[in-house]
Amino acid sequence: MYSTGTLHIQDLTAEERAIYETLKPERLPEHVAIIMDGNGRWAGQRSLKRFLGHQQGAKSVQLVTETASRIGLPWLTLYAFSLENSLRRPKSEVSFLMRLLKSYLESNVQRMMDNNVRMKYIGRTHELPDEVQDKMRWAEEATARNTGTTLTLALNYGGRSEMVDAFRGLAAEMKHKHINPDSITEEDIHRHLYTAHMPDPDLLIRTSGEMRLSNYLLWQVAYTEIFVTDRFWPDFRGIHLLEAIADFQRRERRYGGLGESSGSVDEEAEHVKIAAN
Ligand code: FPP
Image (cartoon, rainbow, N blue to C red):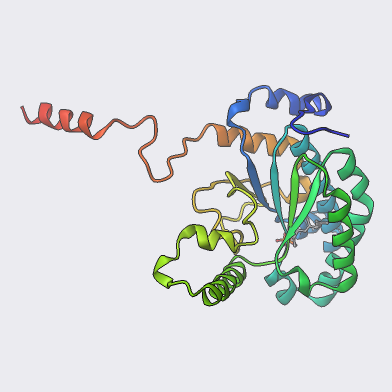
């Protein structure tokens, strides 16, 4: 089993390793979130049924997670099933996705153990079918002591409903502790989000080319770098995760500030003076 903080670069493929070696280890993201999109289109392009796209997508989940674990990525959060998916897709597709999730957990927990991956979930998971919840609990408990990548599956998840749940939790706490609303801080809201135990994502990847957030981690992505690829999720592999990280490392994160390449206000004022002379 992989041990805490140990990289397993030797287990990367030669192509992955070539990209990994161009990365700056001190600037690796701590948390990568992914909107896995394009399973249906991947299948359609091959004249296959949609469910085969989802099945292939489940393979990508495992392979991408293993690469994440080999490079020591602490947090990987995947949008596996949205609240909207459950409301707006045919019942047959929703029940296929539920069966796929169950069988994915059954057959991959051993690989999670071998790769030191810890499983967690966010979303209104209590609304999922009982047998799926049982399997989820089983996988979470089996992997709870692993210390490598935490793979969080967002299931029956919506960003706005997460905020509703957070505000309900906070309102109940305020009532209980007689807290004045004027004293509420961002930190108070953060404490009641499903993701209270993890850092915000540094990088958000979306596959299949759409330029939307689709109600994913709305609070948490305030300063997240976004990487969109045209590749469909079933074709997305560890090497593409590394390419996205390489792109991320070429960016300058400013968090509303000026960034390293900007001059200071004093320097700008100096230019204005010179121009005026
Ligand atoms: C989008 O494809 C994908 C989803 C509905 C969610 C992702 C689901 C998987 C990767 C399946 C298995 C996951 C696990 C964790 C076992 P889409 O159907 O919206 O594609 P389309 O936009 O091309 O129709």
